[in-house]
Image (cartoon, rainbow, N blue to C red):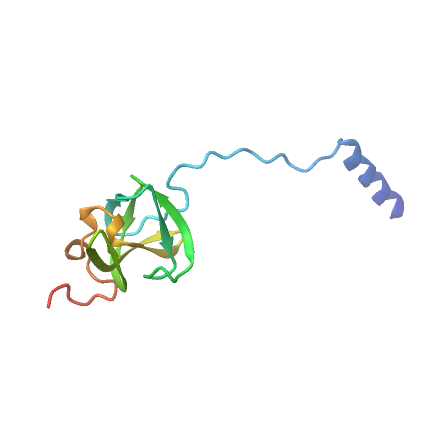
Length: 128
């Protein structure tokens, strides 16, 4: 048995038997974004925005999305209110990354991601 192990280890070190070579994989810009029912929206008003594990800046960053990224956002979650350039927004738009939901402040998504179009994540009424 020791002789067989010695023989195999010498083949590996000599390069006769090698581990399979990994193939280079081209990753498309939407890699990791699982399609869910919702609306196509784009990232705007910034060069890059953090997509967080919850609807607020205190939540962990799951990934970052670059300006003009287009993805399917599913709903709006009530969360931390953010004021930018005098405009206050408390809605965080949900998208999925590798099957995990993450949230982007509504300041940074296109008009298609309005509350009227997406609705609240909990299914409650959008008016009133």
